[in-house]
Image (cartoon, rainbow, N blue to C red; front, top):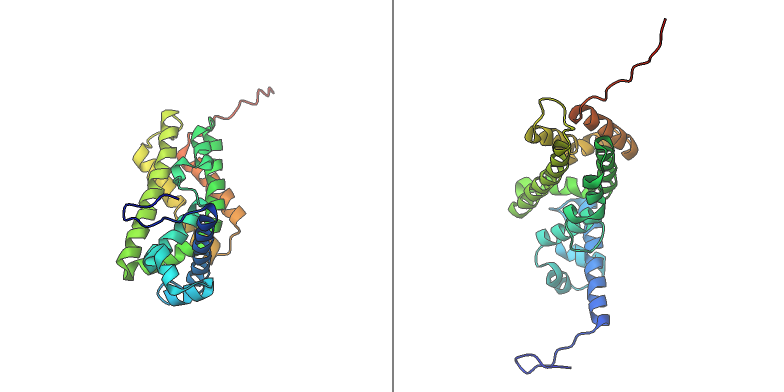
Length: 226
């Protein structure tokens, strides 16, 4: 095995990397449970390390700070796996952009909204509630909102190029509408507070965005004669 520049022998192996990944995932899973159960402020790194069954030093080596750990939990839940690709490069998001039918595009977006928010909704509430009292979490919440806006704008820009937007709607206004209707706060109100099912939200969101953003579908003449 080659030495490093200081003459010290490096030790690396697939098994060692696998163990490190498993430890990191254990810390993330423990953090998610405690953040969602107790909130951000009341959850300590000591408690997370104990929940994960690792030393406190190990938890800090993996994430450095509690806010960094919260960001790590968020990133995993948003994407659904450990891959580095951002949402904009995910196959399920690209499928929306590639769909030729505007109504189908918005229905696919509604489906994605449901699937993702089922994973992230509880943690989203934790992040939103912690943001006013923690600058690092405030920056994370701001990043979540801006990234989310940019992704919704990408969908609207495709609709605009197809000339599918309602008359009088430009890209900026249409993006504002789509972003607002798909905002996490609305999910937390309707599903979290009012008891809607995720499927009901998906149906409503799809119906409403099609109605608000797209040109009305011309009704077919009946051809009936008296």
